[in-house]
Length: 353
Image (cartoon, rainbow, N blue to C red; front, top):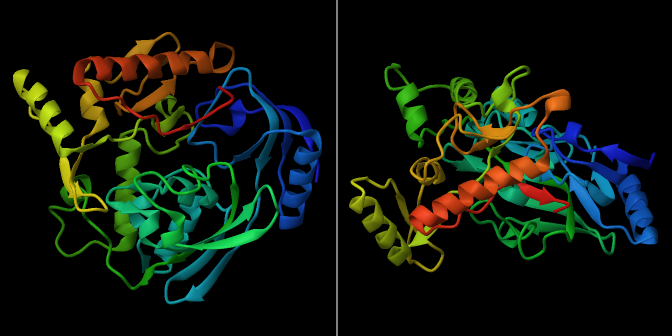
């Protein structure tokens, strides 16, 4: 395994911004991962594990440590919907395989870029499904000791776009393999309004393949599917999480909306201890704080098709830099907070800032 020096990171990200990694390696086995970790330890280097680069903003100064782009491969089928998938596998390729094998549970997560290893970290979700609904275990290497642990679903601490791997123990673990329990012969899920509308005029229930195709088509219409040559695809996906408010905070923002003659959309639920909570669409808050689709600030902008996608409007020598992306991110956060008294939380990992 080669450990390279001063490798530009922008080409490994969908935003196409950011400086170089001081050191860079692509380990393809557990032994190579441990070799790379020993190298980082010997030099006292910080470490970052890079997946598909679709949920990442790299600082213009780059990263002063070792970046690992893990290349572990392999999908083992256990039968009856069970799959054990190595972290370096393409997520969307795995979803396609599950649909081909008539296994339900992740069809609505079609078209999401990145690797399988990143999905349990963020508890990736879309169109009514989250990976935590099908994950049975996660095998991870402890970076400090090199030991391998297996976590059950409950031990992963899954929450909205979160897990133990990006909250309480962020940076402690490197994901090696994730095991999924899908439903062989199961029906697709149509909980999301866009999907219900898509199939409203179809007679008979849609197949898993039809739902996968529909999700990819909807994502493409919102520039959330990576398509070569599509300028709106130079993004990190949805840049902000949908805020989840308690009942008091929801009542306050609902009143502010009513004072402006607006109806605030919200999705009620209960939290782990039974208290009411409300998920508010971040896109609605952004739009009603003056940031519309197509908004531009320097060489950064908002997608013409999705309010939450901050995009790099330039290419080549005219590419935006990370500072411009962050300037627009800050402006959107500050504008929403000033108008609605809600601080939006970014979804992408901010590396090197």
